[in-house]
Length: 315
Image 1 (cartoon, rainbow, N blue to C red):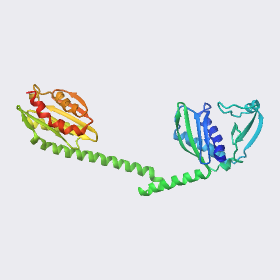
Image 2: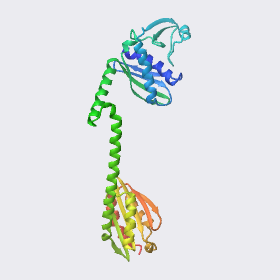
Image 3: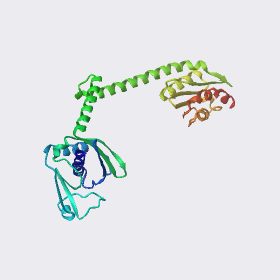
Image 4: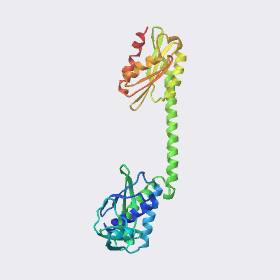
């Protein structure tokens, strides 16, 4: 606990040096495992700021200077540069603690020399309230154990990627690039497969009052594939009203197309909305082409099945 308490003083001084004199303690918790320090600051700390804070504290630790405590009148302590904690009430006489370059009013117990802290490592930083940040740090054997555990995990990850630890970042970048390339290729193949399947859909069209009506799901299709398949089907069916759907998780994509010679009876916007409303969505577009989305894929088969009757009702 003494290690962490002494480290808190050095960290407070380092925070003010790195972030500015506006930094004031807003709370702290020190135990045998770690120190938790809340302070006034209005932005997250970036990696460079945390590294600078760690470097300042660890330089003080390596200097291994003695800790000194003196009792003196409060006014004299403040004139000497001792930092009084915000909101704290002090008596006429106070205890001034010098630890490294830090001078604060403190009545707690501390290490005899800064070197007794051993090692200082920030392990967490985040916001706890408006204008208040929190840093958690560890010292001594706990810090050494934390670094050793991190080193072990780094070596394990490097081994999985068949790389030296120093090459880990580059190798992860290569792996991510490869994964993204594979995702693109999978999407391309799914689109090609869906497009190929779309060629066979024309056989499923039914004639309603002289209009070829088709409502179908195109598995694995993206929006581009739906549009391309729609264009081919309209060319092939000549006089047609078509709805194509694709499902991705809980998302339903819909596209409706009506050939120009059938728009006097059926409008694509009305057709796509008929289906979309049944699957928790809405959409719209031109008389010849319209799009929509939905969020209830389980209701899609029934919605598509009702399209021929919907078209018949407009005849």
